[in-house]
Each structure stands twice: as C-alpha cells, then as structure tokens.
Amino acid sequence: YIPQIINNLNGHPTPPYQPAVAALNCILWVWYAVRVKNWPVAIANAPGILFGIIAAITALFYQ
Image 1 (cartoon, rainbow, N blue to C red):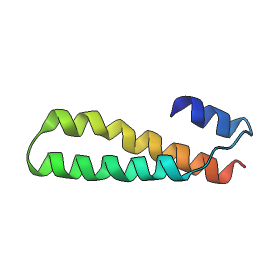
Image 2 (cartoon, rainbow, N blue to C red):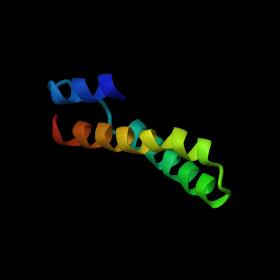
Image 3 (cartoon, rainbow, N blue to C red):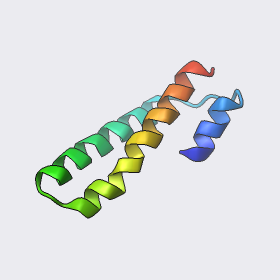
C-alpha cells in the first residue's frame, strides 16, 4: 500500500474500498490468531491493519 498512499498524497486518489476491506480482513485475522495464540499469523497481519487504514484515509481525504 505504500505506492497507493504516496499517490493519494500526491493528488492521484485511488478508491478507498479495497484497502479498507483489507484492513478489516487483517483485523479479523489478528483477532483470531491472538485467540488461538498463533503469533506468526498475528504478527504477519498487523502491518496490514496500519497500512490499509492509512491508504483508505488518505484516499478519502486527499482527493
């Protein structure tokens, strides 16, 4: 999502839906992984939450 975030900040917005849904998906995977104590899955999906939310927000507010 880093190139998408950069494009959003440079005035070339992209649709916010896909990164928002991807962030939700990562939230659910992290929640599940923490419940079953599967730390590699939780750690691997944690950055997706951050980058997905940032990409969705920048797509919405930097149009």
